[in-house]
Length: 274
Ligand SMILES: Nc1ncnc2c1ncn2[C@@H]1O[C@H](COP(=O)(O)OP(=O)(O)OP(=O)(O)O)[C@@H](O)[C@H]1O
Image (tube, rainbow, N blue to C red; front, side):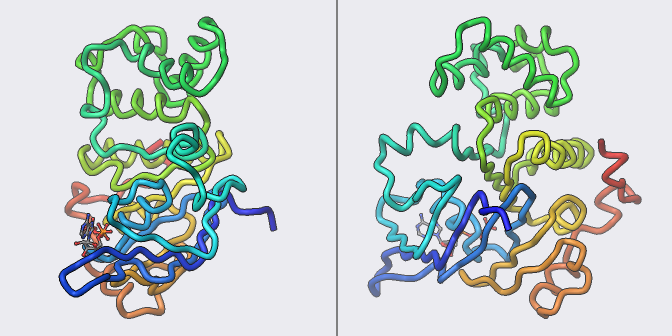
């Protein structure tokens, strides 16, 4: 077995409350290879705090502990703030929920993509431009030259999402964490973006930890699913087993999934989405 990209063993997160410390995430263990692993579970089950613990972005008063927390072989438990700055966006990246909010409206797309290269690499100006254009094409933006010189307001929601993803992926992070990455987009664009993320995990050799409430999309695009309930892992299963889960809790989540009606009467296939 190749070493996983992300390896989490017995991760717990406690937060202070009136009575002392409250354990919100409790001994969570899982790994992510070159694949899509979905983290699902009811509201407040600890999905976001787990993701924030991995990214080193917990609230200052939180107390995380883990027996092992590695990404690309790096021990994330011992990183200083300075070391984190070098790794966020390079080793691991967090995909923002609303692309329009994360792009700078006053700057051309190309400048914004190249800025992250400037921060993390020693590429020359022309090489940075080439890398930015290449990533825009990989993200399905065939008219890369035009997008490169556009401002965010000149792009549709779906194109802005792809441009933001190009900025996030141009450094080729090993692990991408996406917390409800498409919730601000309409269904059709959501499906396209998830299909794109799926092909990019292979194309760029990265792992994707996807937090989602939408079990229909998870069943279609994820490889494995980790179900969280009240801060613990309830069950881990292959995405295709979701309809037939062992745990009654998972079966309840599946029963509450968005209906075909939400998707306009018919569920598109992954191939159609591409
Ligand atoms: N900064 C914080 N301070 C105090 N409590 C917090 C903080 N962040 C999260 N919590 C609590 O921790 C629990 C888990 O929150 P978390 O955001 O990880 O859940 P989640 O599974 O991502 O939920 P959702 O699906 O609604 O986003 C919740 O009970 C929440 O109220």
